Image (tube, rainbow, N blue to C red):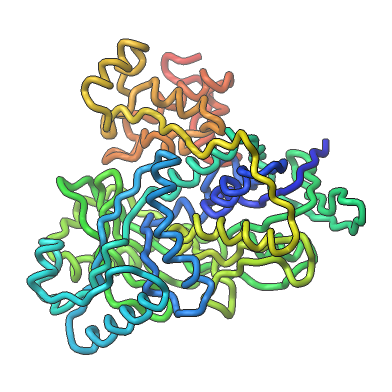
Length: 485
């Protein structure tokens, strides 16, 4: 079976989803083609969620051009798409005169890149802004515009809005081959072969993350290699007050180990940066220890015994450059690249989408805005965060809202059902977890996983033994569950 679209976007990470949401405004048929069975399964998932302000990228780079703009857009995107975004501000802590000189350079970079209100502050102001910051810090770069999000929540919200505006989402569809055929009559030029069916399109957008080099190669476009710059990340249990993001002075390849709060009240220590074999998502004791040691330098009272999860992912870095690659291919007209989107990819996503639209216009793609485009996505009910009156209203409407499945995060059955039924909805245990946090608490699914499996089986109309943890082959049970047939 072959389906034909005006545009195909390869990759449903935060970049591809943001681009899909941006282009859904126009009178075009669009398909997002994803190798995995859900949204944000790559670098977007294994991510600290920081919305960096934009003082770090070298002026003149593409990173510099989209980072500050993306950070600026997050306020509007959060309001329209209903995801959580906290603009807390951040500090880069310095401990000596050499650090102070580096902070001055970052401040200069930030001014050139368009980052507002940067200043160098001393110890009194540091501890006024963040009382838990190290007392040894002698200076800091204060940046009011930094914030944080759940990156997969942003990607899910963007693609839900895109799908509501007519975009097609094709999951479990790894691209195996791309045929490029020249045409003078406006017919489809690209044919993507996938196990889920073929996709024909006039324009192709490569937002495949760590698979971007493979897509470019299959299309006969630019040849480049991806480096797997692996990062280990540690999540601590919830705190009474979320920490402001605290950074060390950065290195040439990394912003260093950062301690930050999250939109749900946890503390995250992110991230190491080591070149490893592609696909390596193992956590390493040496990396985790380095994270904990570096974090205590920034926040000495951090209780690192409260770790609830450690995980790892790979940043999609293009070998030989530390920059993004955004633009039309110089080799294959009609192919648009959004590749090498490493850090600050989350912060830059809205501006990458904006830039992709501009590049397509400059390439002659006709973009006519639809009269019925709706930029608003209503956020699903979050029972744990809802006011008491809303909780009572929900339970009155459906008793399943009072049936708590995940006790750590206070997630009821009705919220899990809603996560599965949304479009595009969850089809795995981890898909439920990303949408409503069932299993993200201190017990890490120890109590609720079997009940989530039973709900998925019921809603998807399958046997519990067919329910996946994540992607193909990740079955959790064999045979009947206790009390479930």
